[in-house]
Length: 112
Image (cartoon, rainbow, N blue to C red; front, side, top):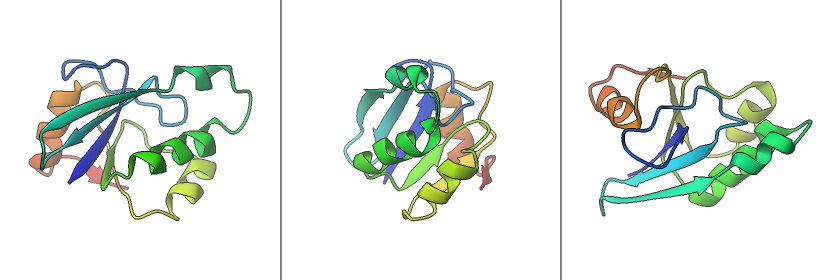
């Protein structure tokens, strides 16, 4: 299973970015291969409108099974994400990526 986290950095100890559309990075963990990769999304900060849907399109390119974030995607991004087959879990704000992964595995995050 491929899990993508909204993150403020590129390490397991990085903080979860509570924002979806303007997240700094996507931190990806493939549970089958144990491979970690990141995608820099900081250029989206310059986008005046439509950051959420544009970020959702980037997320689709990663082909995740699960998205873990803080507050969840906004309305426009949520509509785009609904077209995909991605399970979204929220409530990871204030956690590190590793803590969010553990919370997900323990069923402590809310599915959106």
